[in-house]
Length: 341
Ligand SMILES: NC(=O)c1ccc[n+]([C@@H]2O[C@H](COP(=O)([O-])OP(=O)(O)OC[C@H]3O[C@@H](n4cnc5c(N)ncnc54)[C@H](O)[C@@H]3O)[C@@H](O)[C@H]2O)c1
Ligand SMILES: O=P(O)(O)OC[C@H](O)CO
Image 1: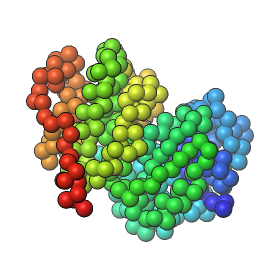
Image 2 (image 1 turned 120 degrees about the vertical axis):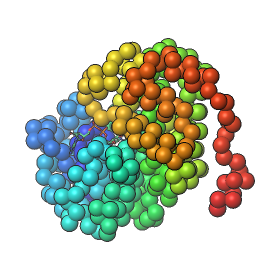
Image 3 (image 1 turned 60 degrees about the vertical axis):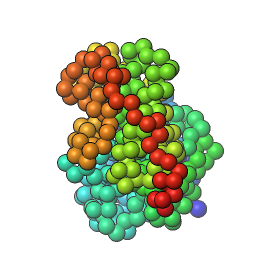
């Protein structure tokens, strides 16, 4: 069945999602702010700022008018950076009322420590809300690389709708009802991708990378479970799956920022050279504060904070991490998990 869908945010991920939706025969409007880029997409069928080498589906319509973008849509995806998320939806409160809205944004709001789904529920209380997250590098999706994602929502109808509009021969969509865990996992893994990029730049070996990714998973799931997430979510695509891709791929912008830091560049230079959003930089500060406040042990977050914010030498921080307390390998036991149910 052909659906009317809007995508807000014409950067890398919004473009990739809009393109799948068109590929699947849906009527899609992509909202972005840049008039020239919108014209180029409509006439040349290429997003020349983000994907100059990949043709877009010719049916994709770009618009710079957000009201027009969402007017007839029953389903709306949001793919703006977390810093711009509330400002994007606030003026559309009336138009978005009662619709199915899915955030693809992997970040946390400064000051409030709110996730994007929580902002949606606050700004548009009548909306049905979901979150899309998983190992989803936009460029690989544009290249039609075989990919899987997770749609998380308490609303079963929304999960089914999103599965039906996005599923195709190169894109699979799994469901999860732990929206909080899926969304928090997507935000947290960006921090560890910065650490992994630094390790890469410092020439560290496979043992080290494996230790980093595994301890990152232990640390992020400990934090998320403490905040109310389901620990099982972290063995899925939106947990360990997204952590692996972001910590291993040079396509990850967070990984690229880490590489630049590991090569001795300043954070400002690393972000400027990237020219795209690396959410982990803001998330680091917010998670460090929250972990300190609620007393969750997060040595990798603290170590990265020492390097990025406190400007401590990497070698000194690595040494203190290696000499730190050696805790248990796996935090959760089956007995404990069963007792939670
Ligand atoms: N790129 C990926 O592979 C990928 C995959 C999954 C999720 N995400 C998440 O999607 C979100 C968006 O990332 P992206 O990769 O598309 O970023 P991007 O940097 O490629 O694009 C961001 C877009 O948002 C626009 N934007 C910036 N400030 C804005 C504002 N104030 N108002 C409206 N629009 C604004 C930019 O112009 C741009 O079009 C992030 O939270 C990211 O973590 C990205
Ligand atoms: O490029 P990054 O680091 O924002 O990561 C992109 C996606 O989140 C990977 O799933």
